[in-house]
Length: 90
Image (cartoon, rainbow, N blue to C red; front, side):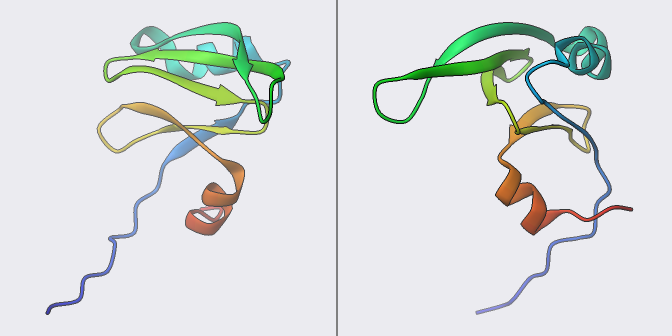
């Protein structure tokens, strides 16, 4: 068995705080559209979130999630705990 290490990669990201839909949309530019929506939450409730229409399909982001621009220009949401464990300021 061989071992591999992930290459260091810098990404750009913006955190969705529930009030900055315009900032997220500006960050994504023409490559993605952002739509506010009520998302199913834990249990039976719903919470505020956004649907990100990307070239890879629709993805949802909840308040507090990070929106990342990947190395090939793609966008995707990332939960805060995963973001903190994976990324640090450059």
